[in-house]
Length: 256
Figure 1 (cartoon, rainbow, N blue to C red):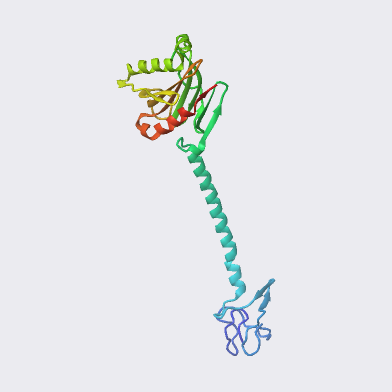
Figure 2: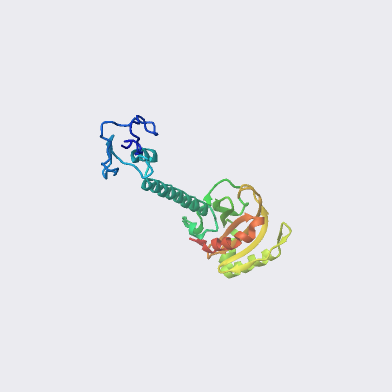
């Protein structure tokens, strides 16, 4: 006779099995005569009960295991998918805040101009204008870079354009810049397409985050009616990192 709970062989006259369960005397042990295990197992609580070769009942093992391998694999896949999706969104967020990421650059179309800038640079009024003689068109700032766009509001410049034309006005502005020093920095104006460009250090508060010691790219565009001042800023200590991007932003400026 075998124990109906663990499958151990019971000795004649044995009342309790080594597993602690009573030995069934009814003869309904669930085992086939001759010591064979039934293929269908025992019916217990709606589950089919059988035994492993070492005597452990499958019903108890099923209860202890809780979740099958397939369920565990599904949970792992879901967790990895969530982590992957969150990582992708975090990556996109970080990249979107990087002004050097050209995929984040957007064209801004206004009534008087258009320009392409990083999406991380937002339009703001929290600045002090550069001085008289200019009409501010817009100011854009981010954590690392900023852009100030203005139009010359000077009748002398307008009269010069009318009398000397675009090239004559540009030549005058270049010669004037060559004679100037700003913050002990000798200006070296250059032409770049339709632009006159010059770089030098400045101090500006609230333009970018963490510092007011900035490096400025100053670009001037002369049209047949007006002249425009387009200024771009980054931390002076990071000028080598951002200067190429600032030139690209300057190139994208178009007056209307």
